[in-house]
Amino acid sequence: MYPFIRLAKTIGKSSYHTLKGNTLAPTDTSQVEFICSINDIDNFLEMNNGRILTLFDLGRNDFAIRSGLGKKLLANRWGLVVAGSTIQYRKRVRLFDKIRIDTRIAAIDERWFYIEQVMYCNGKPASHALLRTGVTNLLSGKTLPAQTVLDAIGHGDLIIEPDTWVQAWIDADKLRTFPTK
Image (cartoon, rainbow, N blue to C red; front, side):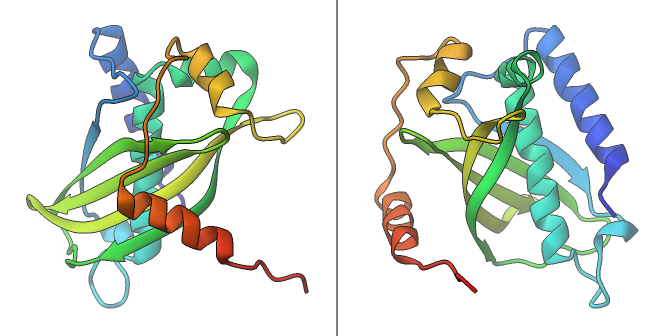
């Protein structure tokens, strides 16, 4: 089940930070903290890989709210979409472990925002993800140009070029065919 209580707490904390002036520029890194709970673990008594991706969602929510994008999403009837991802799992997360999720924009192109996220378990890197994300118009379902989103949050001149490994993933993913049947 989706962690709606954690989502509400994350939105509340992020909104509180924003009200107190603790906002983020698009070039900053967001950090959120959780404790691995009984609802996060699988039959191997470690955090389920799907739950890790879900908690990364909460990290992106914090980043969106604190960077000012959250208000623009509501005002313009926009939504967030994940169009691709890659993840590495390196360390097990067990019940009651403290975790921190760092979220930052790794690159921007004409259409997509590439988000890098790292989950730390007890201070050590446990998982690392790169996601291709976008902002969509909820009425039409179409992805907005990145420039439109950047203009809306007052950072229309922002350019974030991809690191070599990010560009390699972007290029490799273009070669991948999607099933037609």
